[in-house]
Image (cartoon, rainbow, N blue to C red; front, side):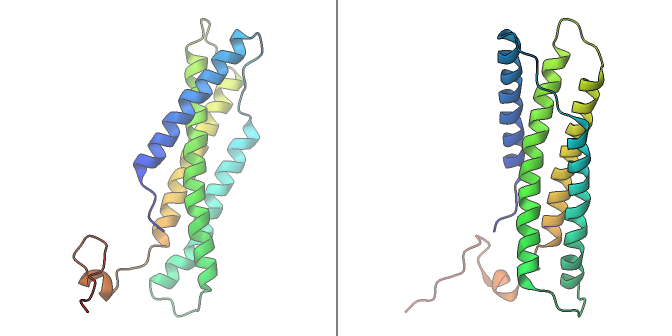
Length: 161
């Protein structure tokens, strides 16, 4: 599995921001109330960010030389969780940014509860992205002798027959 690139996360956040801003515009033009992110979502995202780091710590310790055995399926599951957290966090960060831009461009801006809950949820989503990337780094295997023998392209040389 390849490491998550920041360009992928940034692109996902930008697309989500544009779509969520467009959704807010369409809802208000249709006479509906705008969607708001609620406080419990920020608590869940923050808790998930802490959890993914805590789950990745045993993998980091094992890769650093801890002699205790570690189930390889556990390490794989933590890696998949870390990658999915970074992608989900980027998506939700983009949604929060789109909602905030919509609220800031209203003719009459008020820093009410909806604004602050959306801002805190955006920060919690950003924390989830960072925690996912850190946990993914914790699960990265050190280079092996075979990796150093390759020509640097990531492809191993094919032996001639």
